[in-house]
Every structure is written in C-alpha cells, then in structure tokens.
Length: 414
Image 1 (cartoon, one colour):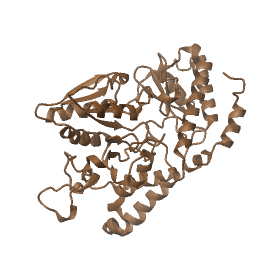
Image 2: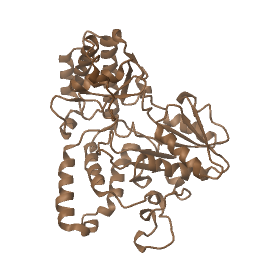
Image 3: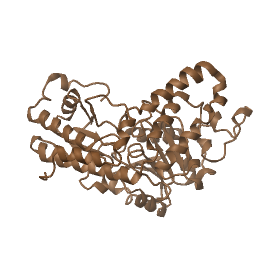
Image 4: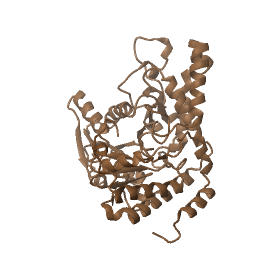
C-alpha cells in the first residue's frame, strides 16, 4: 500500500472528481456503502417524481387517453434512444421491452436461420446460467435441436468451427468480472462465418460499449443493474441494421406487427428492430427506466470508464494489502484492461462475510463458490467509500465477526 494512500487524500480526490455531482442524482440511504450495482442499482431521485406523475395524473386523470396524450405508446422508442448512445448503437438498432432472458431467446431463435446448416451455440462455461437455459429450451423446440458447446472464456475464439452458428457470451463475466475483448472475438467469429450475441447486463451503464465500432451482430442487456431502472426493469436488445430485415422474431406479438392497430389476422413483421417488440409496453416500469437514464445526460463515457478502473485498482490494493492474511484472494483479473466495473474476491466463508458486511452498512453481494462481488458504479461511488468498505471488511475478517450462526443461515435472495 503506497504511503500517499490515506483517507484524507481520497477525500481530496473526491472533491476533484469530474463525476462527483452525479452522486446527488441518486437516492442513497445515509451511512450505507452500496456496492451491489451488479444486481440492483439505487433509484435516481427523478424516478419518484416521474412515477407519481404517471400514476396520479396521467393514469389517474387521463386514463386511456394517456396512450396518445402522454405518448405511452412511444415509450419503448424513447427509452431506446437514451440507451443507444451508451452502447455505441443507433436509435433504430435498439428495442426495449420484456426481460433479458426473453430477449436472448428471441435473438438466438432469429440468429440460427441466418446461418443455415450450422447448429452449434458456443458459450463460455462461466456464462450466466439463464443464457444457457434459454439455448437449451430453444433446442428442445427445434427440429434437429441445436448443439450447445461450453468452453473456458479464453478459448472461445479457438473453439470456433464451421458448425458454430452463434457465439453467445457475456461482455463481462458475472462472477469474476473478466472483460471479454468484444472487437477481437467478434472479428474471429465473423472470420469463421459465425455471429456473436453479447449479454451486456454487467457492462451497459458502467462503461462505454461500442457495438457499432466492434461490428457486433446482436446483444441483450437488463435495465435494473447499472442503468438503475428499478427491480424487474425492462430489458433491451440490439440488432445491427445489416441483419434487421432477414432476422425474424419467434414471438410474433402485436407490437411487432407492421400495423398493430389494423388488427390483421395474419402477422406481418414491422420493418427494422421494431419487429422484436412483442406485447403491450409496461408503462410504469418503462417510465421509471426513462427517468433513470437521465442521469447519463452529459456524462463522458471515457471518464466513467477511467473512474471505474481507478475504483477497482483502489479496492484491490486496499483489500489485498489489508485483508490478504485472512484468506481473501482476488478472483477478478489484476489487469484493469481485462476487468469490467466489478471486483470479486474469494473467501472460504464468503457468504457469511458478506452478510456480516451488510449488517455493518457495506452492501456487496455473494455468488456460489465463495465469491464476494463488489460492483463499482462510478456515478455515485466515491473513492473514500472504497476506503471505508475495505476498512469494514478488514475488521470483519480480523475479528472473525462473520463466524456467527445468523450470518451462515442462507437467505432466498443474496
């Protein structure tokens, strides 16, 4: 640990932080250090007023007229336009609605016919399980099924062959926080004749993503993590323009129809990415996400990434320097260029340690295998927050505060 690394110096660093003012846009409980941005972001202050407006005045007074008077019907398009710049995409390449899992199913089903004769979906063996489940379920519905092949994330490019139709992988691995080189893997997949479907759930909103610049084909992501849209917020999907007219959604809902209010008995897909919409827009959750996305107005995505890396480096230095003797190991890559906006540590009693931390006002989260995850959200986390969290972690470990029965009892949601 460097001699210049003191709490006072970090307080001064926070004063110079160009993103410091963003913290005031969020509702954060006093005395709580929130590092759980990977599972649920805190509510931006503007969300409360927006929901009150939508429920009390729009829904309460204008009722059904609100679809037109207040533009409810256009909410998916408006939210897509706010998400697109965060992903390096065009507005007309993003559709918003449904869940990440449903959107991934849609895009997998649409991608396979784009590569006829190929039946393999290639994924990493540490992929978030729902992505794998969706591929397995799709395979059960298809004549001839599909082959799902799992390899370590570093072996994805080498595992490509002439039967791989789609590489389905996360941009940031959910346990380790490892960042996959989007441009390099996309390039390798294209050279092998395959498409890539990216899960951006752990990167969108925490760092700039360049789907267009990387030549990406397809992507999905959630709205409730770093985009702060609230529990169960609508997800998004991305379809590059070059694929839109050939790609067909397997869920042919009325909002994906070329003329939804014609009420034709036969389905005609809308042009462009709009064909991947399905059911009636969830207005309340879309309104919350719409308001939440305003926190990104004027944010320099390079500054966002730079602070994310600095917070990660600081956390690693403090934890390994102060807690390494208590059985803590670094799971995330040490090199920041290979890491998303989270740092994960291993500890044999990781679950109990995390519960003890939460009891003391520090909120990371836990994943099986002794993984303690610290989500680093640059918009509201301060450098001094990282110092304070590391101090609490050191105390929990040094005093074995975690070794109490109440911390070992598993909860349904962690």
